Image 1 (cartoon, rainbow, N blue to C red):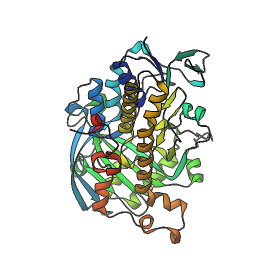
Image 2: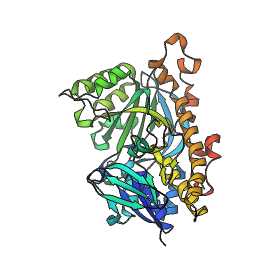
Image 3: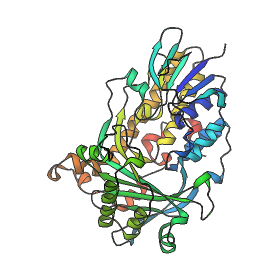
Image 4: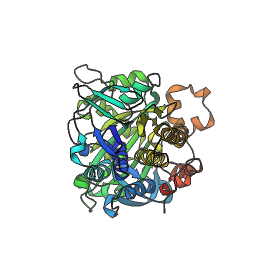
Length: 419
């Protein structure tokens, strides 16, 4: 008898799990709360080979069109000069470039939009998802892949809160065609960092519209981590009408005065070319940075994966890779225990919980300097919190490959290790 699964969340984590389970014989349906295709969403991402390995396992062909290869990293000081550099080959891509092939690989009639989960019911025979429109769906397994503010997690672990890290990430994309020639020559195609006291920015090229990687059709992606106390965060999340957006303000509703203040600050702390890049960004937006650790990643017939289970800070550039690996861990556990779902989910829990806990801890270590700007008086900060790590160390540690992080590499499944 065919086993059935419901996946809540049609983003990357949900699609990794859906495609992996389907290829092993499961009947899978995906339910996404939004009403439109997600391909226009997301921003730049750093690719880990381990994610590509999972895509190959699904049966997708991975080639050079998935991203842009960058071979060196540079730190720019306030004057715009390079102070440190490091050879580090990485592939830079865009969220949509990963989403689209995963979505196309899954049957469209089993992917459902406008389905917002409200409740779940489970018993010895199965589990039922109950949606806001009154519809119900029953299956053997229910998977929560609904992101950082997971409804599924809140239903099974209501006392596990997101913890604000004390800083936000301003983000932006700039079309390559929008670059003035001199600025393009100075910075496009490089992986750049700016690290003034109390701030941190990273800049790198990504595919452009329609996943273009041809010269002249790409984009530059920048992410600026900046300390912000809770009161200022609330103000930034309040639009011009006075409405507060607790779950993240849409980019188009961010007040012009908030954007103008951010641009002015950039000129005061960053290299001229970085400030100019931020000035020409058409629609900057921001995300608050959080930590979250679930006590376990399953309850009965319900499993969590990706950001629904653990939320790590973005300094590791590992969100999409973690989603892929979690889905792979889940598939392996179900294959190893084909007749016993309880044993399979317990088997799934161990590596995912270890991986997530260590990932969160590493993210906190990398972001300690930023967090301390808000959470501790200067006299109480440790040496690591007072002074950011040396630039040569920063270039190695931020966005490091999984294989170069021993406490994470030892947890990778055999097919999750890079060739």
